Image 1: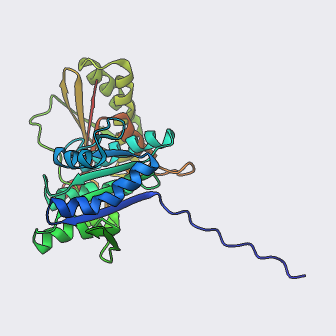
Image 2 (image 1 turned 60 degrees about the horizontal axis):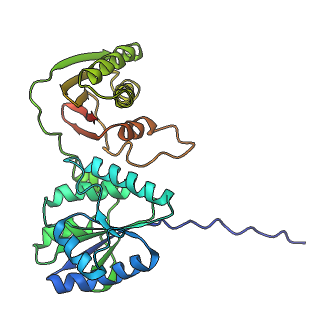
Image 3 (image 1 turned 180 degrees about the horizontal axis):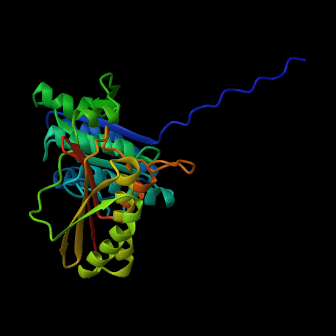
Length: 315
């Protein structure tokens, strides 16, 4: 008897969908959005909007319903595209736990440059992989070819022109996009209130002790103090284990908020660590992902002088 062959495992499609819409006027925009909004209404999805003009259009079409149309929790969350993506993924994960999905709509050309949105969109594709959501990025089709290319073609698997979607043959991987448009440095804060150095695993105890002292000086509650200690400790540990083994921690402490920046002379080939939730059995990427969960803002960038991580924690 010939043994039965088992069927090859089928790959489960990713429920996260990232699409672009090119529009020339409001009528064109509504025509493209309508089938997506109709489908979201039938499924009972939450609709998140990222700017007021889009909110008005969506509410006019669906009708004002606070249970359906709400602000995107990352509109944008901060100056850091990485943090915007991470916070958006947190919100989607919470919805998924309640058995719900989201349609997220935002206009890429209302504010921000193509480079800014390239970082946000590529980071979001990484952070939201596997989550039940459709992210719809709107772009003014009257822009020049170069801008339209970067707003739409790099990050969107499908592009709508009117109500019809076509596969995007110019799609790039998020890693490729982020290599082409490196994460920008964090905004300058002026002289630090405190600067310390660390070298080797033995220095981590002092890094954590300083983190606790700075967080308490800022008046953070104990849960946030613990989060600050763990986040900064994980980031310093990352520099020691995967970087040059030493670095500097700079502190800016204000009532209700503490900012720490970890700098080392190492060079990373990517700024994506900790964006994608690590798998159950994964042994890499957990430290930065955990630090992102414990902080309000975590932004990582690299340059000729080394690698830098800015982390902010507040009450």
